[in-house]
Structures are given as structure tokens and as C-alpha cells.
Image (cartoon, rainbow, N blue to C red; front, side, top):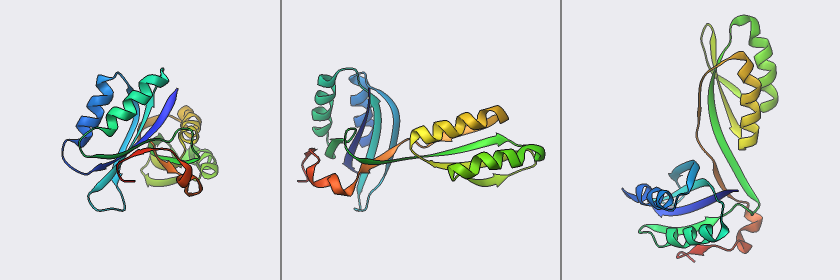
Length: 171
């Protein structure tokens, strides 16, 4: 089963390597990873989507992540009410004769065309991973020239923060 894990870390060289090394050593496949600055200077947040077969291994992983140098907080937010987003940039083969068709696909997904050439358009779409998968599937028949995705970023909705159990040295 897929699990969404967030870690709050001190933004220093080597932190990402230590955290991903621990995941690799424990044989967790990272399906998605994002890292970015937070509202606090010098603090970053990592969001991982990992595939977990054994819940005991997950609990052990969370405890071991918490012990890592520069890791401030570790939370498995999978079962919480979360806001989850991803960004994809997609180059679609789009000769002028099919652009209206492609536009009719783009509009309902609230995607935007961010670049255009004679036979290729570049589309930006954001949303949950399932929405992005559905959008990509609809564009495939036209020919996807290039595709890149950011990976998932997420956090717990505000109304659940007070009740969300987590491991933290910030509390």
C-alpha cells in the first residue's frame, strides 16, 4: 500500500542523502519525493510516497527517520484528511488541425498552455496524482513528446492538525 510521509528537516547539506539512504537500506521504494523550503528560515519539508508491504516495517522506518541528524519531525499523513498536489509539464504533439480537440481536453482539467510552437504545445496541470494520470491518459493518443512530474507534496488539512498523532521533537 502507498504511504505519504512528511519530514521536517534542518536545511543542510547531506540531509536528503541520509534520509533517502535510510529508505533505500530498509528496501522502501520511493515512488515520489519532493523537497522545499517552509515558512521558517532554514527549515525544509520532504514529502515521500513509498510503497509499504508490512505495517511493522513502516513503524520502524518512522522511528528510525526521527532519529536521523537534522530531522525535526516525521509524520505518516496517509490516513489523515490531507491536501495533496502534484505538477506535470507535458509536451503534446499538436499540429494546428487538432489543437481545438486538445483544448477541449485541457479546459475541464483546468490545465494551461504555457508554451507553443508550430506542432507542439506544452501544458501545465496541477492536482492530485489521479487527476494528472487521467489527463495524461487523454493526451496519449495525440502523442506525448515529453513529460515531467514534480512528485507529490501534501499536508494535513488545518481542521485535523490538533488531533493528528505524530513523532516530533518540536512539540
